[in-house]
Image 1 (cartoon, rainbow, N blue to C red):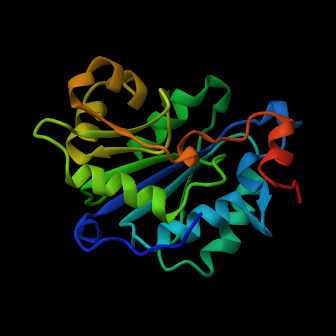
Image 2: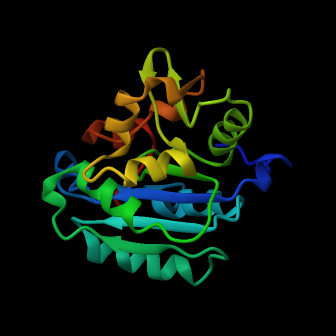
Length: 216
């Protein structure tokens, strides 16, 4: 992850951020992925630091399993963040990823131009990757409302949604981002990238060593 500054044009976009951190991490011995550490910082801390560079209008983290531990980390982080994290707890995370996405979308308030929907287990997502997505959004064609990174044929994350797309999703009870994208492929601008950060995530115990992470 290399540091960079938001481009002038992209800095005018009002960015909202939704980070999903409700999973159980069962294949990691039920350790919360957001609290894995890289270079002395939790993944949540690293991502939050990068996001500050874009002055988000709102930054929401959805918790579920491990809510107490993640909440404790967020409380510490918020003491130093210019754009603090708002926490939404999924009361039934066992219902799956989609329930956390929908809950997070319904919690959005205030004005924004684009929403970044991100995962808490991607250790290499930072300023450069978010900047790539925002730049792609600025170059989109009419009718394209979603920026989906794609690396060697693999769908990546985070994904960027326009306010218009989010409004359409919320207007349909039970609709979530992935389902909407599949139903409206004409609204999806695929951003072909060589940057592996978009498809790197922590899923198995061996990934901890592979990505130079630690549990504490």
